[in-house]
Figure 1: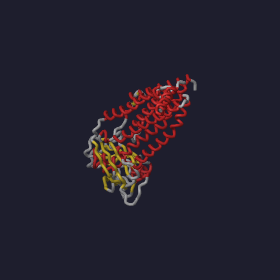
Figure 2: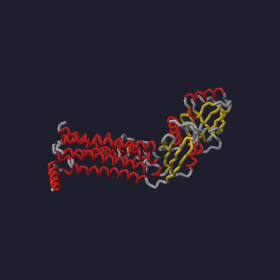
Figure 3: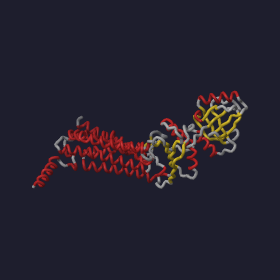
Figure 4: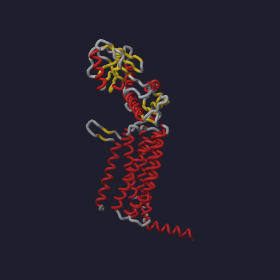
Amino acid sequence: MSKGKSRAALIAIVVIVALLGVLSMTGFPISSTSYIMPFYKGIQLGAESSGGVVAIFKPQLANEKTTALRMNKAVEAMKKRMEINGFMDAKVVRVGEDQIRLEYTNNNLVNDAPYTEMLAKENNLLCLDPDGNVVFDSSNIVAVQPGTDSATQKYGISYQLDRKGAAALKKVTETRTGENMIFSLNNETIAAQQIQKPIVNGQSMITQDELDQEGSIEMAMMVSGGPLPFPMTRADLTFFEGAVPRADMHSTVLFTFLLLLIGAVALIVIYRANGAAAAIGLACFAFLQLLALSTIESIRLSTASMAGVVAAILMAYSTALILLEATHAEVLDGKSPSGAVAAGMSRSFGILLDVHLVAALIGAACFFLGTVWLRDAAITLLVGLAFDVFVLVGVLYGCQRLFANTTDRPESFTRFGKAPEVVADRSKKKKSAKKA
């Protein structure tokens, strides 16, 4: 590539990276009604930071083993139960092979102990015809909402059945008008309702005389998501009062990444053009890391996840230094800037691969085998390592190549701009002094 094209490419890259950096810090509109907030403000805080609850659930089985499919089904059911109760940002994830971790923010923690116990119940709703035969159960319910019956003003839940459940309900209500259907939850009768008319669309309501608004929300939560594939027990419950304000935590994240960018500026001062290539790579790394923190649902900012972020940043900075020092050494050996860049990558690639592979294995071990704290740290570490390997190294090396095409001065790729011959002369003098 010619010098002119290399300069144009570098200018375009710098402009794009700077624009992305500004937009990620200030936010930007995407339409007349939609606006993307600054990335650091979109980061969700964990219960430890903002106040809330962390609960651990385990299957309550005698000799039967759990499977990944059944555990995933339990996770989805618990997510839906949380959503129906208004906790749209609740985090429900598997931990290891036989644990489910629930985390949600809530400042009113008084009634959360029985509430989390309720989540662990199988909660299988059965609808029985007048003869006691099952018409449908919780697995046939695709949507449920708390509400009141417009005719009786009684509280209850409205439900929508899938095709199989709707066909069964239609058949019973068409042939048994005037008789009672029985509804039971966890083998306890909760309502007996007379069939007034055929229900042909699979949509109806269950009401109770003694039910209030809070009770209808609770019932909807228990029914939504279908029954759990096995009974569960709450193994641990921790309340956090949220000692760290949201603004302070966001400021901490922003300050951490600003320190990374200040370090990038220091690389420019020390390594000149070589350092500028590293600064562009680190800016891309910081942008993507912030984007991941604000968009990946499983990441909640806490002390543990911040530890993973800091570890990933240190790995990124170390990666940049290894590549810069390798190029510096090759220039001192007499190679041209282009040759030094290629040789430096060849020299350091194996080292970088080994270091990142070991770090990734440690992160994976923490994720699958570690405690909840280690798992949160591992998520942010592994995300950062991915950006480090596939973005930072690629962008840094590409920019090094472009800078090498724009200049023939080897001192632009050495520490503090020292000419290779000057450094070599000083080395010879030191060796001579030692021999003397």
